[in-house]
Image 1 (cartoon, protein in one colour):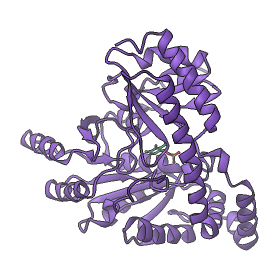
Image 2 (cartoon, protein in one colour):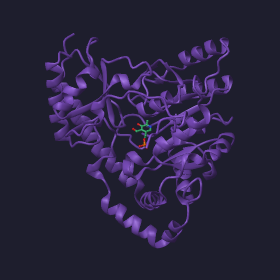
Image 3 (cartoon, helix red, strand yellow):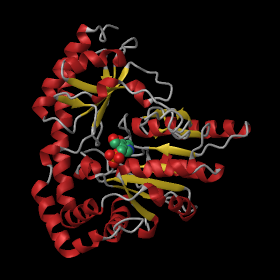
Image 4 (cartoon, protein in one colour):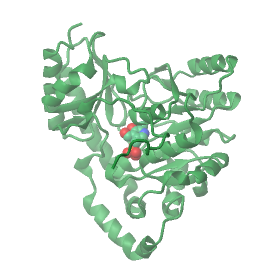
Length: 397
Ligand SMILES: Cc1ncc(COP(=O)(O)O)c(C=O)c1O
């Protein structure tokens, strides 16, 4: 068959990703997998069989367009209790992971050339979706309190002066991926004000809100601070209950829901996953979150300890109070993108800083995730990685 000329002209633009990220390695410091060392196999088996016995016959039909109602009611309850946001279950739609909700929202907002504002470094999956859609991603300076709202307002004002209105402010406001910082309460208030004042919606990604390890309690979500339909929200159960579950959710105000209906919310997730997650979380949520946090604490501390032992003092790194990743800066001339194939040969993979930037710059940074390997493996893997960086000259200032 000759397929020439048959493919859609709407195919996504190609976005280069380092080949090494697809490799199989023993030490996986490049993906925020759910923590397999506390994975609730027995709990999920029990939850799923109970749920199938009770409402399994619903599987014979297509699920509701916005997904399992019981789970949406539970999410609404949790958003109220944990994140300070009162939400109607009818404003919630279940999705194929957080990525499914993000893709659906971008589908209804972003045309080629549209400006989207994001943190100085941002989650590579969303960035890729934005670049594939031809968005003009502008990174906003970000510090220990999250996105700098003065800089944000300045950028929006300048754009407005040139006749441009960004389509959205995309922010990972909790244990930001990749930097690990949390947007402060004061900046949340400012961001909502800015959003309302300039008519630029916020797209708030709280995928890591369930992963507080220690440190300060999280400030409430912006979703609950806004009274003008300015905030869209996304989160997921993938990092908690398993990436393979492919279960996430979005929350959107009515005008956005109307548009999302036209793209059928990007397709609903497996109803079986929804049943399992609903039944399991209904009975085990708090206890399980505590178990995950204590496992992640041991892993984070193993990685911090190993970095201290094996990385030289001309490198710096974050010490996040939650989430699943550390953000490392090497000396200015280090090229973590070029070194990735050598690391993969040595059985370690990580994310070079370049993949978190629209311009694909900043190769002196890297992100290391700690949710997958055990504390002992993490220690060994960091020693191996330090050896690679040493040999490749990345530690030479
Ligand atoms: C901030 C953020 N958003 C979304 C996702 C996508 O998650 P999912 O597997 O739920 O689609 C990730 C995964 O790493 C993430 O870190």
